[in-house]
Length: 224
Image (cartoon, rainbow, N blue to C red; front, side, top):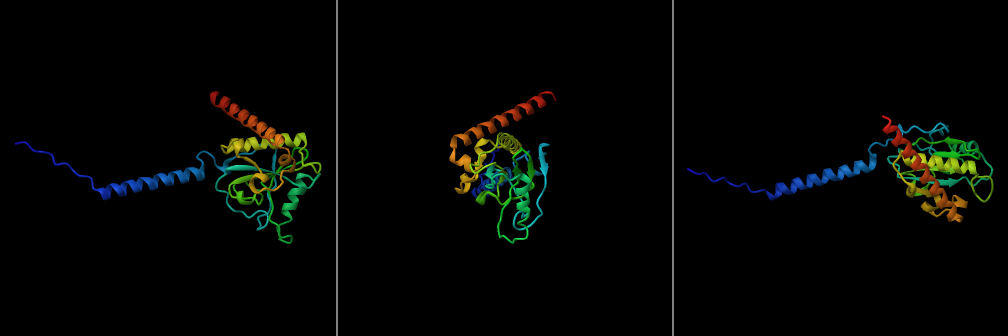
């Protein structure tokens, strides 16, 4: 006696629930990917030897301690106070802690007139530097010798080197490097807002630095 197999019909409601579950899981995966950037942990980034850590005291005005969940860009600033050192500007940020000036200000890094670099805020925390982009960027304040705001060559080279390092560490490109001006319209860093060619030359140097870091990493991997 022949038996005819009964074909099961797919329950439309069950299919819809499965599809919805898949979409939710996929969306969660995209969200997690965007938040965590696999392989990139700010806490695990080892900064170059030329960076000196002098973290600000945690306080509401210059180091809020707010978690920086993702790094999506690097913002370049100038200190706006000609002739001052990295240490002086770091001290200014520290002096805001009691709120007597009612000013919110800080930066992750300050690069000085001799190319020295002070880290004021951990890579895992916000700095009060870039307005609406505080939550997803790292900030670099740069010292300059005069009112033009142009960086000295040794300072310029160090800023480009540090920016390239951070871009490489967080999987960014020069397209993710911004001026404060690009975020809020503020004339900062002054010389590089008023001289677009100079800014583009800076980005080219950053690109060159990223390329060198990628080449060095590839060579190390090839050597085992």
